[in-house]
Length: 438
Ligand code: SAH
Ligand code: SF4
Ligand code: F3S
Image (cartoon, rainbow, N blue to C red; front, side, top):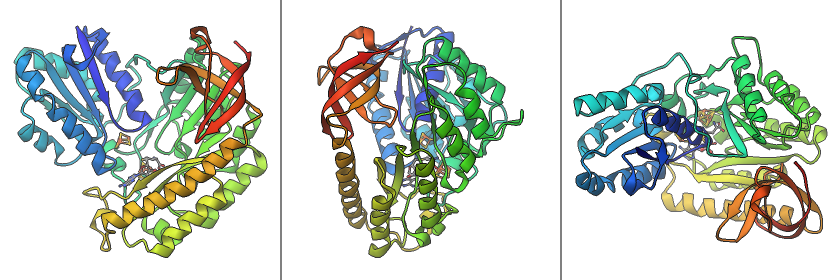
């Protein structure tokens, strides 16, 4: 039988879709196929911003027709939006052709839910409030070779005032270090070359078996010779000197750190409940750069948080210059029902948010271009990830997160190649192969 998974949201979700695929394989859905040919379609949803939800609802709605033609098709909806308060009712009423709904805490039960649906022919909705155990017993069907994701923790305790994640993902739970390290070692032995450790705030990782994140990272870095380690996301409130030391001392740890700043205004940071100041953030970057001079720093920024003034927005612009980000994910604030910020007075009009967002994007992109142009004439070590059909070139990233494009051959996928950079455009570098390694 055939399956199709539609994934929205962050890397955590992308990896969870690999686990969903693992469960589907066990249930006899062994072939991935286009949506029209699938026997089961699973939507793995996101609700971080309103447009993520609209997108999902639009695409789920579009399946009504297919289900009419193909009665035995199973449609399942899971992920963060499924867990969000009130959404199950909407799906129950407005999307009667959805057969299975499962919350973020119910992922390990998906197999049973499918069985129940097959037997009873009734709709199966399963939403739990909390889950103690983690998902360690699911074997994912990995789709990212030569990259692989490894969860180190689930959930979030931070309650940034704009954010829905703590409500839909529950409290923080760290996996045992022993299990994480075993998984990393197995992946390296299986030939994966880039492993990304995942958690909403990796810096608050604390395992039952006595590991903190820096200790886990430095142990993981010893699991093989030529492979890369990445991690996301780091919260600036817990960013430590010890972590910086581990980044500096381990050649396997990529010299790129994603450190979401969200705003350059202390008043807004405080309203966001981020628990650091602009000054502390900039000090952290200075500490990082002192120890790891070429380290690339990327970030997330929200514009138009309730009550943000023009001057406060300009503080975000100036912070972008001071911090020297190599790139950023930038968002207009989107109110999420149930969060503190959604109930605040002083919501900013959409046009103002849009206008601020485009000014910010312009500022960040100018810097990204400028930094990329410095590569021209030099070289970059790229881990070849695949082939870009549109460009007709092979592609991959360097350790700093820049995309590199070059002419090559299939055998290079999964290998490190050094390119001579001849041109740059945005975050992308173009070049010719100088050398290839294992
Ligand atoms: N745990 C990570 C990020 C998770 S969400 C962290 O703390 O950094 C990814 C990004 O989405 C956030 O960093 C933030 O910039 C953005 N985001 C979250 N909620 C948002 C909202 N309500 N509106 C706009 N952007 C939001
Ligand atoms: Fe959301 Fe903040 Fe948790 Fe990140 S740290 S997931 S932004 S609440
Ligand atoms: Fe990720 Fe979206 Fe959930 S960003 S944690 S999939 S709300």
